[in-house]
Image (tube, rainbow, N blue to C red; front, side, top):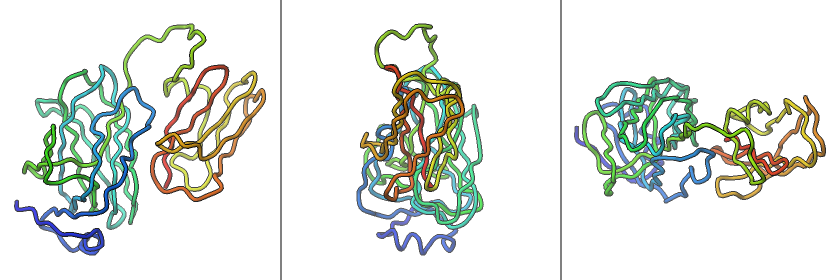
Length: 278
């Protein structure tokens, strides 16, 4: 396959749905990395792209990554610039022998622009090399990424090796035994602990997200929505919230689609949850 370059995202959008034979790339203005502050024990493949890669329906792109922890992959985040119509993106994680260890298909809406949050649980070992394989199904997709630049890991498209990265992140959790007593330090509670104490709906959200307390909390409880740089976008304070109490977060200004952080602080404990905005 011979990859062809084209030079504006507008042209890429016009070509979606009409170019069927080959994947293509395009330049666009450099953007900040969308995965700076996601709540995971570690992230891998935190690429920051200044170009795009067009995946026609049926195209497959494969990128290798090295697991940063013994533990569990929880989510895959993919930065998408545009999709041609309603379809799906298939995400698969393979081990170094090419054996599939996890796979899922995620819906992509027509014209989607932002970070796609894909739940893809897979057991991995620290230091081992794995591959993330993405395939466009029923739609054409423009992925954010880098092309023609050196990379420490390999990127392949339909079997052809590319020098570059697609802008993805693999969110992982460390498998450890948690102590019963947490002491006096601020603790970053794990996702399972978050969901045992709170319900969040909807996620992804459009304009407003509601947090419901599943148990009573003593003292001042702070509920914050921040961007991925840690800037506070909305803040609510509740005194002695009771079981079943709701907190509605509705930022006063429009938020761009993508990933945000929900942080709840009570009695020197911090509960974190990633929120996705449509």
